[in-house]
Image (cartoon, rainbow, N blue to C red; front, top):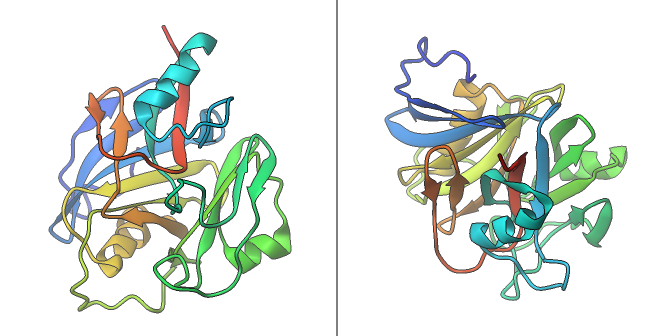
Amino acid sequence: MIRALVILGAVFWAAQASAVTCEKVTHQDKRYTICEVDAASEELRLFLNDEDGKVLGHFSSVNETLAPQGKRLAFAMNAGMYHDDRSPVGHYVEGGQEQMRVIPNAGPGNFGLLPNGVFCIREGRANVFETLDYVDQVPRCRFATQSGPMLVIDGELHPRFLPDSTSRYVRNGVGTSADGTRAVFAISDDYVTFHEFGSLFRDLLETPNALFFDGNISRMYERAGNRSDVGFSLGPIVGVVEDTP
């Protein structure tokens, strides 16, 4: 469960599912939906294309590919920036196979607002790495997606975040515990700044490292809460997979 909500005055509700717990919280007068995953025990995966190479793009399409395996999504959200053809802007690994190399240099847009980072799913854990740290450590990720900017870096907010920023969007991202067993995904239910969104992960969710996935196009799926945001086709999608009863 998300810790310290009562102490910090958060208002929330909880919906229990077998593979993931999602809650509504309020932090600094902004509303969010957060979903916590035990990365040590749950099946956390990334999705981009089907077996024929066609972009999945939608939560419903992911469920269609899982159904013949007797599985389904418990939770999902968009997981990184992408080009017009839905290919990843940065590093992408699926099933242990690298599909896009690491991009270590600065560039235009939020992705290039260094430091950016990589969300890496390994056996029994998931971690957010700052990109250069990821390059140095070379973790063996079964799944990985690069995005940016980092929201929280070793317990500190990204140095470029401004408390008085006027840039507000619906935003989503992920934070992880130091031991990698706790992955917390968040999407804002209000328009928020980077500073407000990063503060959520640092101060309320208490994740020492957190990564921004995207803004404006952010969408989420939660089976237990009957939520399935719709819109145009997405690129990489992260999801928790469970057995179909």
